[in-house]
Image (cartoon, rainbow, N blue to C red):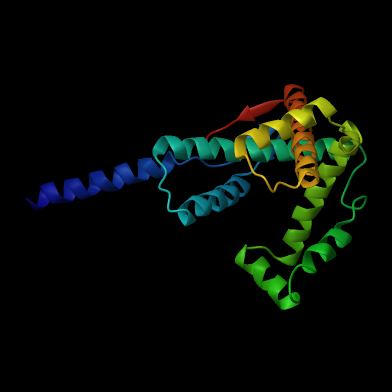
Length: 214
């Protein structure tokens, strides 16, 4: 009986070691020769999973696999956009990180509240500055390449959206000027998002992307 118990214990240990050996290690993708690290992937994934947990959602294996794919693609896309920004002469020194940071800090009561918010989000001031720099670089790239600030929407589309809204909600006290501004904003954002996606797909098509185990 003891021999059986020992055999089962050893078998369990061996199976455990094999399972550990099968745990993916190393980068999760290689983009134009640059590794997307597993550490970056794990950090992003943890952030996303914490959101689902906070919403009381328990993911199935299939849903978890889909979230992992989304995270990897997000990291790849960010890398490609930063790479394109640098090639276009846009870097952390050419964007106003300090100005953006100051504007964000003004939305807090004081520096202590801001510091607490950073800590709760697992940011240091330096790591948050880097995130801001990346975001501003990508925004500058989109503006330089796509001229998003010059996008206009057709009057016909604006009127159609207003008419659709009024027909659906049937509200008598609707402020038509506010509704018009809202329609213009939504239509512009749709165009902007479409152009961004097209540009990103172009970058991906021109790049060497290798997915690894994740």
